[in-house]
Image (cartoon, rainbow, N blue to C red; front, side):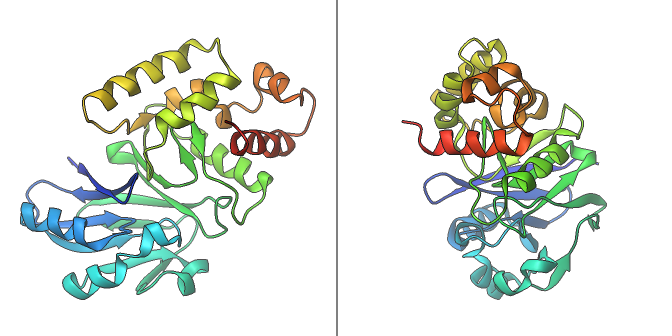
Length: 256
């Protein structure tokens, strides 16, 4: 079954993803942190919002929920452990749950680290992953609540998906992340090629997303914690993986 994935830009660098099956007037929205741009897009298309899927509770992912729910009556779905932090939640899910929308299967996986209640939605039919703020192109989300070990495990879950999986994260950070990634691995040819392509997309006014998981595995330092060059750069050649992650996050947050 064909599935259309539309980008609705909000705030400075967020994306809301609108999922639509051709022939249907009903759609789902993922992480609508702002209501007005989403509703304007739906009105333009003549579509009706019936499902809202949330990856985590941060304000720029959930602020639009009350207004959209009031106007559309859409059902809000989020992680069971975050029910009290997601406004207007109607349905809770847990790790391993499978949702169905218009014949489309969405697999739910718990991926703590950025927050303790973060989840992702994977759609095998579309080879698409909606991972919120856990993984970015050439980067990953900050550890606001979880531990480095939790983030390592969560990223390993993403890394285990098919390499042709398309990564739909929620922020347009690719080029900024690329500066740090180039500092980490200046001779990485896959990284150079992806940055070149991302810059071309940006010049054309297009999102740099989605990226391919295969690209991220070859170029994203946060998925390359066992690579000798990454460990040497951090001075952690023989350290446990969680310690390498902690050092890499520290280096990223202090990179200028």
